[in-house]
Image (cartoon, helix red, strand yellow):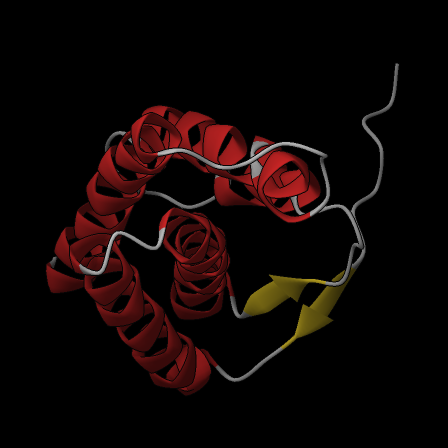
Length: 135
């Protein structure tokens, strides 16, 4: 069975800095939202921080970004990045993205426990991205 072709966009590898800056900004807002006990904002900024982190890695290492509507497809692209612990990072990314609908669209509040969970996973993913750029 042939794997599904994932739509991508070619980008300059040097553009990773733009996505990394976005990830840092979103990370900082996520932390500020946690400190303000704004749990929905923690969740939404965590999701967007993770997307920017993924874009950073794909741009830096492969010169591409996902052009798919479904962000989970980007996790499959992330597996192509030649970095240690990439499988674990891609799994973390999928877990973060899976919460997007709950946070933004479902008819229930996003609670402190939810925010703590997504923040923990996002922190780990964010730190992995930064450490992967140092090598």
